[in-house]
Image 1: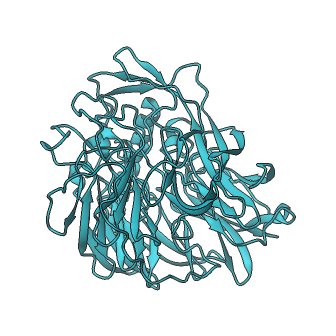
Image 2 (image 1 turned 90 degrees about the horizontal axis):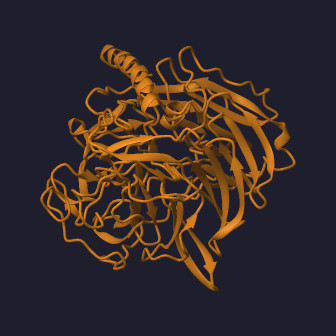
Length: 585
């Protein structure tokens, strides 16, 4: 297997020291995970090597006709082959072996610690042909045998962690997973490299630079691979980074097109010192229309709008782009002239359902604003009024300070919702967490474009929620209060079980129809990524990477670290993982 060279060891050692200090600073200032986001009134698709932005379009007008979709893919039903398990990103698994009758027998199949320099874990595993791929916060990739946990190979790329301010501006790096296609594993690194790795050996195939980390840009997202293209975005809006979505050739790594989500400085609404519109999660491909759907982050400065007049398109928005050309088809802005750091951070989910007697294709997204948006996937228009799933109380921030609910942590951060076609319901993780936002000239460390400070009221108790929404009505099917903010997301099975995990490390299986708790267990480390479900040789497994996020560490919600845990029927007794020395949040 590839070995970690001296340069990478030295870089990892420097990062370890930096991360410890950064986490202390993060806790002291209660920084939000994932940074802010940006906006722009005239983004545009550009071909490789060009940079001019195209003319903007109105929010409800499609500017391209649907592209003919690629040939239908065939996935092994035993696998979890793409980020959301299917192209529609529903996180719905067909397995039923683990069900309400058998789940009491659930135990540990195997687990593995992911390294001594790992302080956070936000990786969403991918499973292809019985091999499970998991990343670490230092961009290493592990390939495990899905049944036994044996390490097939480990890839440790050369990454410079010193170039960007990182998540929330604190130099903290995370990685949310890989994409696997046609014998290759695709990885985005913190310093903005797109890597292709051999799925068989772990050897690097190619590397492409997708952005300049010296600008404050960094990468945390899992890429999406479809029809010979790799779709990526960038992060770093609170440093004034200009957001984009881009396509690269999956065989060569050469750029095919790039769509900037905001205009260049001096054009439209954008003045010097502004930025945003970055992308934090894997793009969703609509194979029915040949479009790529992504959510964008807020504009910066995040809580001061005087330098960025207007609605600040296309920030805090869902955008649909032609998958082959990158041209804008439609956009839906969730928060115009965002003053609260309300990214549309979580990935878009697609599904077909019946609304008012008509078969309709839906695009759903849970925003940091605390609202669930349910849109017509063909036009971007609202199908139902937005649905609040946490407390809502926000007014424009002032120099005296204003209470904002939810605060800049969300709502919902990057955590994906799940959808069950059996129940016709979406499952939404909620972060119920208020902040006081105060406009000032004070700069948060590493977040030069935030525009002020944020603090937690002394009488505020952060909690969470987990909700099921009936997608034929746009109303709640059931709701649960949770003991911690829910920042991992969910997955659901054909056995009508919904799996999620909280900040204390408790993994839950809820009844998808009623919300009743069918099973739970404490895994010992905070959850910051949703479980995945797969099978090997007829045996079903539930896998989850645990260790916490910036949300966990900044607010002392639970133990942090980095470990992958795989559960199965009649497995070993589940023993809580212990946070390694100096890794308690």
